[in-house]
Image 1 (cartoon, rainbow, N blue to C red):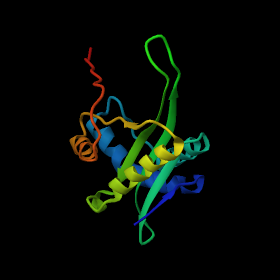
Image 2: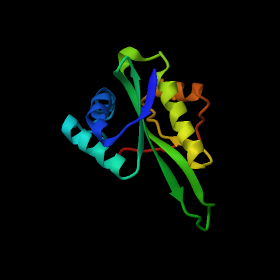
Image 3: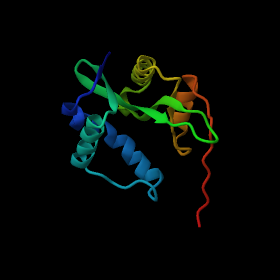
Image 4: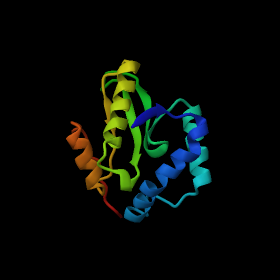
Length: 154
């Protein structure tokens, strides 16, 4: 398996890899997520990479298996808190038929190496409560819940 950093030229591949995950989000939570087009998502990825996000792509025999999208986050000190600098893994997707072969773990390892190279104090991510498989995956990698976001429909 090969892991490499994505470039803007990879935006269409990132959009393709994103499609099945986004469709799951739309199906699970249509009040939050809306259908997209591959063209719009590719343009979004190209913009994110141009803005400084870092994406990693996993390949096996030149076939794309998945990606992780990460960015360095900086929070200034304020009256209640210290300054913070960390890497946010904003997205992770692995082709369903290739799961449990190490691509997700390898992509998270790449994101963690990026965090160490960036001199930050940790890696954070968000996961929807409606995605128990992702929660189990991240927990198995040693991630733990630090905040709970609650909502009440009105």
